[in-house]
Amino acid sequence: MAYDILIKNGRIIDGSGMPSFRGDVAVRAGKIVELGKLSGTATRVIDADGLVVTPGFVDNHCHYDAQVTWDPLCSFSCYHGATTVVMVGRGQRLAVARDLGCTGVVDYSQDDPVAGVRAATGGRGADCVFDCSGNPAVVGQLLRCARRGGAVALLGLAGGATAELPVDLVTLDELDVLGVRSSPNAYPAMIALLAAGAVNTEPLTTHVYPLSDVTTAFDALARREAIRPILTP
Image (tube, rainbow, N blue to C red):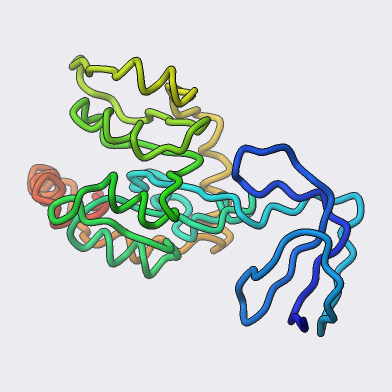
């Protein structure tokens, strides 16, 4: 069989949770079509000996509001070999997320988030699930979106509220549940990216208000009319 690209002799990590293995990855028409020991011809052959190839790593179901504020291309996921990024939300945020590179979106006001994420990941669930909402009511959904052996990261704050944890699901599916706190050490890197023009935030800064209209800005955010309102002095 003829391929467009054949990546040979790499150490393959396919995102299934199985051990890595040495093999080849074939691409045709922009899609991965085969894995394993392949002998077909290709327009371009890449020798990946000594390198890790991650063709099937699936990331992330998440409320992706946080990362898109500093990295709208979701580039960190892509740099790590992610092939699927699914955002759960509603309203104009979904359209913006798709425009900025998310491969799938789920409108939780119309569809079941768990079913949507499962469908987008071929039924297996996501490797990594990130929640930035801080809503205790969705914890069960987050865990059901993850594949067996997957990880769930909680980034949002709940204002002191508590959540029920389905212990059997966590135990039987061997899920990792992580609390993640933002680090101030990340800000210099973010500022440098913005200053260099490496990150385009224009699609996200949908509303600009003078500082005197701070209440109006927060009201627009609460009504989901604004993605990220900006206050100017």
